[in-house]
Image (cartoon, rainbow, N blue to C red; front, side, top):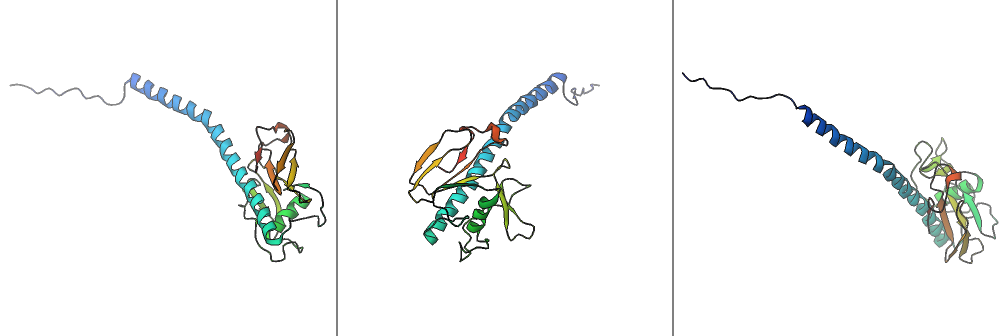
Length: 195
């Protein structure tokens, strides 16, 4: 009588197979870690570009509607620079959002529609009651800088920190962000700008 022999069936992986799988995972993880920070920075720059563009568009729409630039000081006659985390820069945002208490935007048109900040970064920070704006930050939790052409010559000179001055012809507004978390690290390469 013949006995049928069962072919050997193994269970599990050999040591070589296991080492190959671990090596593949290690290579993929190393590639992911090197690409990860660059992709995160690119996403932050894109978000900051969107924020800068939303402010610039709001200013242009305000100008089209009222034939004047929004003026948080009420009497500007020379080009001015504001930042979006203090004083007149915040007032400018409120005028553009139609939530200011003054008469610059009498129809209370909402020209500025930017997203709400998440943990104090990447958007507008509203007051607790939601009726006023406190600040607007880029993705690095830094303010945007807004240069407005109050002498109406359509010529702006912009001097971002860490960069040489730039003359912009044919513009009423220029917005930029430093593009880094620490202002001391800003350079011409890190700037996110609307021009």
